[in-house]
Image (cartoon, rainbow, N blue to C red; front, side):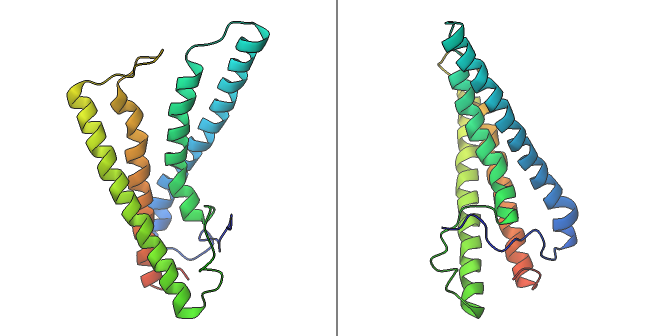
Length: 175
């Protein structure tokens, strides 16, 4: 496995990528990073309340779970765009020339397919939750569709980033 592939960030990019997609995906990644910091603060608060003050908070576990889903989905497209995602490089490290381009193209198609499937599923889940009026059933009561929105946003950004990579590879701007 590789934690960092050839960085896509330094590669030449189309104007659409540079001025539209990159800032939006970067902003979602920044929200993801801020969420990590927020989760750290919530975790410290929960530890202090539970173990030092013997007054455990009832809401921290639920909020942490929801925030983890949000931070992963909002950060996925930025990690993919930068090439900072975890990749199984069994094939890519050995592939050269046209084979490497083919492997990269197939990888980008797989990410696009995943983004589409996840986006459709998220859209259906949000639509159902809104129509049904579904609420969470824990200590914090909230409409479930609100918690599912980051899935939809993340899948759309991931899909758009994959399309961008495919187009830029076809134009010769990327590997």
